[in-house]
Length: 226
Image (cartoon, rainbow, N blue to C red):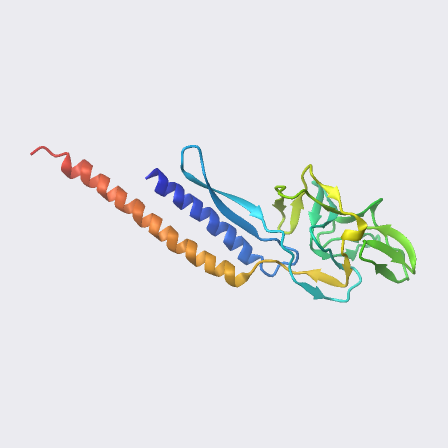
């Protein structure tokens, strides 16, 4: 019964992860979570998750403040809770003409928040160098974490960086101006997986009910004196 109950909990967790992925299939910059099972010391199954950092498809917007980053890099924003990584480069200017994300968090350059002057052309190259009217203004911070690092989702499209964070060399950044990265969730695959998990949940539930019925039989009938 303990194994069947653990299986139900594991499948519930996997279903919740898949449902969250599916709900964010249209959220720009979202990275899907993958749920996988492992055995605990007591040989009962448990579920852990990891983030799928596969790049999503790019959509051209032609907005000069919409940015996509290539490879395993992330833009860095400053939030009330500290610095966070984002792949959603849908940026804009606040009333103080600081570059901010959709939530108003400052997008960080190598020298801190970035302020864009009035009345001029803004160009951003593949290294994250921002030029205003053809002159260097600032360079975006683009960072990554070590391979296998355990990034944690926060607020949908944000990630909490860990101690392995490091700057991505300018030549490897692949920043594209006027593009946005879509979610990397495959909606059809997520729906198929949800149906598979549902069938497995029903089977585990039936097993638990059968075991309970057998135990009830043993207690109530077999234990009666002849």
